[in-house]
Length: 286
Image (cartoon, rainbow, N blue to C red):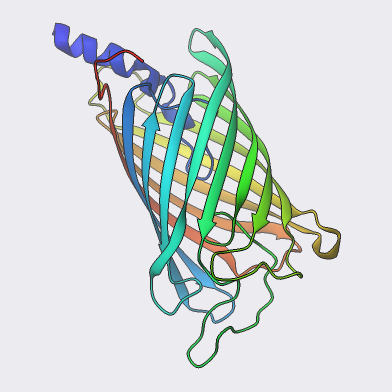
């Protein structure tokens, strides 16, 4: 019994933030200190340039260095720009929580994040018999689209079973390792989001073995800011999430455009994600 109580106390930070484990964005809260997470994300999408189905696979390693700092390292592979699924490069993401205000069944967090990516994709798809097939695309990202850097601020408010989060960030896109950024593409963009998560089940916590059921809806916007290619869009991404034994997570999400004038290669994406966390990986104090 004492061992079970100790384990629940150890996992309490994870239990309290269950409904802010957003699928499309990161909250201002961090994973528990001295913990390790393994995540595999699969994305499926229809590619507008040839109407085929694309697939992206993202293996990810997450490390809770301290209660204020965490780091993600991500690998990327897809067939979005190639004829078959091939490695695209990778990225590293770090988030530092600089503000924390706690109350009973609620808290407020603010954090700053930075991200860098090195991508080897061409900027237009490779087709059989052609070096590149031109098509109209104004959207770039650091998830296989372009090398570059990004940074921003996240603020998250937890109110009992409801979590709300906003993000604002800046993206600077650069040349890929195998292709130069076309002059017609915007090298600068801003991103912003509003996310909400609700803990539907369990109604009352009795054990860390109870399955959590969380519902999410996220609004995701981006605007290209270069004068030659200014455009913008707003997407919506509802999601359902299961958490097992307070350590293993399964996400299902669908993202689609609400409005916008940006020419894009992908307008709709289905996401499947599996994640497992290992807590207290070392007894050594940081």
